[in-house]
Length: 154
Image 1: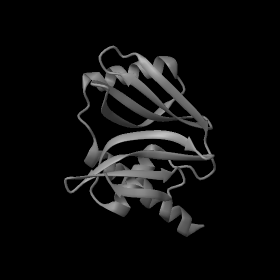
Image 2: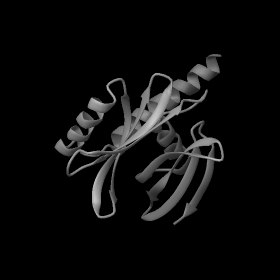
Image 3: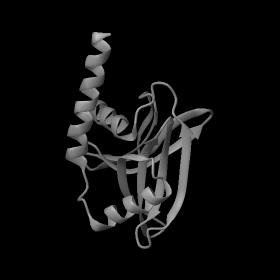
């Protein structure tokens, strides 16, 4: 039990370090996206954010927990329109997006997350995305429990 607590504490500490290392500038646009999501999801606790370009437009992907659920909210930066909200029951042992990306960084090195999605594939809830490491892009898939399923150069 003590070992389990120590591992959890280490992952949480690493999550804070990685979040600080990879934190994007806290911009007005990000604040607006967070505010728009809060209106639609007042009980959500946003854990991780990624700004990405999709079809020539910037959007914020906000990853959150809400009670016994885990989810993603996509907010169009230019209008703060919520484009999509995805909610799943949070499986036992599921990591938040922040914890999962910290674990990925621990295993792969100083990565920058370019794109991140929360998806269910073949019954398994997972984080899928793109990361940059040493100037090279990689695609990855990771179960929400932390198991890396795929890590390949893009």
